[in-house]
Image: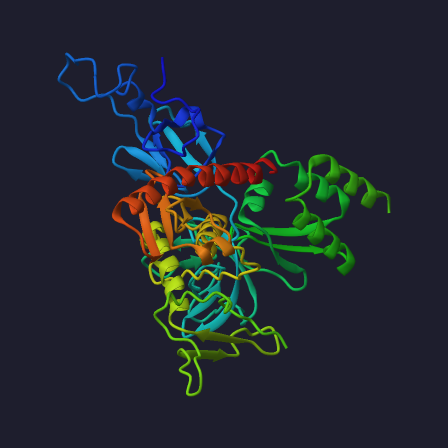
Length: 275
Length: 197
């Protein structure tokens, strides 16, 4: 089946939209338009608006595609709004067209509902805490949003503490709200992060890479020293090892992982394991 | 003590409208000054001479506002800081290109990319794209355009000097053709960046 528009060509888009399938895994730039699989049949080899006459008056089978980060719906096409690699995930349950998104490298975090993040408590005002999560506004955290917290039994949270929680409200129009319990009321690892340790910042892409199911970096780091580590989707990592020196080494390794190739990383790990 | 100059005072885009210092009782242009802008260095200042410098910032801001999807970030300010490292002509076009790539690097959602192209017309009517500082000074007219990446539409134009209507169209067409090269360069450098990961 011939695709709607060839990928070759020097102009960035020039009004020609490319089929999303042909661009998977490639770098896309803001302003490009992508055609969904359903539309490729319509803009077939005839081109110029010629379409085969449909004998059934019923609606065409519509495929429901989810538009992820970096893409916006523009008419019945997808408009790319960020630079990055185009990715696609097939739907697990069979119906729908799956998810398309742009994998971009970014340092700045924008709160998203459901994300687990590390925040720093900046203020206590009445019944809520203001937590800095790296976005444009501080998030609010109610004191009742901890496991086992009641009006009489308040959680022990001070200004400057680190909190690991998730967003329940996060959109562009409202102040983000986070909680430290899941929907069943259990902490599930969330709450105040303990004493000591080191908090440092990395890019969002590195966090996603480290949290991917098949990431070897984390397993190798675990074999090196015993450690506690918390990843926040807002680009923050908290790490704690037995001594301060080991903690700093781990922090440096994780920060450098972004720029190292696999071989360089294995070299560094083997050198550290020897010493 | 660090002094931070936010605009390059060497570039005077006076265009003959503002009188420079001439003889006794000279009239200087309007000054504006801000101090202690940056918190890290011991001292910092911003000095603004003339009104023309502000218009360059306004042009860049208007171009960015047309392209950035501001509705996705309400009640948020996006600040672009441009520092001139060296000026070899076509400064505004270079600032526009830098601003575009910086916005892409920051992950700000945009509806298209944009680029700046400068044209100079000399006294014979010859068109020179991307002129050097010397060519700009000797030209009869200097035109700068900001074009977007989707249809090479004109987003912003600023011109100085004398030119005819036909020459304007000619310069615009040449700028549109040149913008393809700039966008190709954007694509290559962004692809190179993503190929490393």
